[in-house]
Image (tube, rainbow, N blue to C red; front, side, top):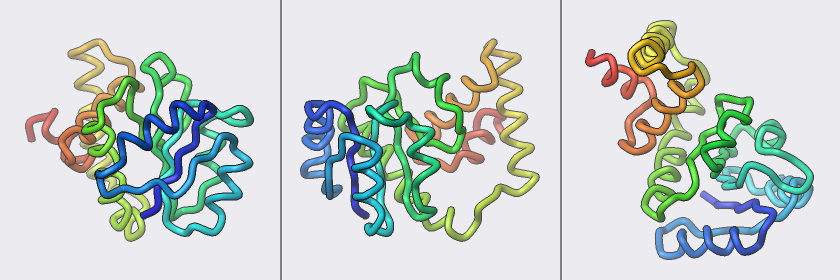
Length: 173
C-alpha cells in the first residue's frame, strides 16, 4: 500500500516521513495542496493519505470526499480541531503523536481495508451495540456524542480491535 503525505508545511511532512522510515510503510509522495494531492493519487489505486487538518486549498473533509473508494485517509489533528471534522468516517489521530501510535493507526487502517471492501455497512445489531456504548459514555462520563464516538475510535485504534468489538468491551458484553 502506498502512503501519501499531504501537509501544508514541508517540515511537518518530513517529520512524519522520518517516523515512517524503517516501519515498512514507504512514502510514495509528499503533497502540499489538495490539487497536487488529487493529481498524485488519481493513478495510484490503493493508497493511504496521511494529512493534517487543512491544506492551503482544502480541509480534511474536502479531501476525504475526493478520494476513491480504495483510498483511505488518516487525519493527524490537534485535539481542539477534532470537533471541526464533519465526517465521522474519517479516521483521526491526535497530535502530538508518537511513532508507535502512528504505525498502529496505519496498521488498523490497512488491516481494515479488505473488510471494508466486502462490507460497506454495519449490521443493525452492530449499530445498536455502538449506540449503546456511546450512550453509556455520555451518561456515565458526561461526554458529548462526538467525543464518545472518538473515544471508542481511539481505543479501537490503540488496541487494534474492531470498532464494534471495542464498543462491546465498553459495555462489558
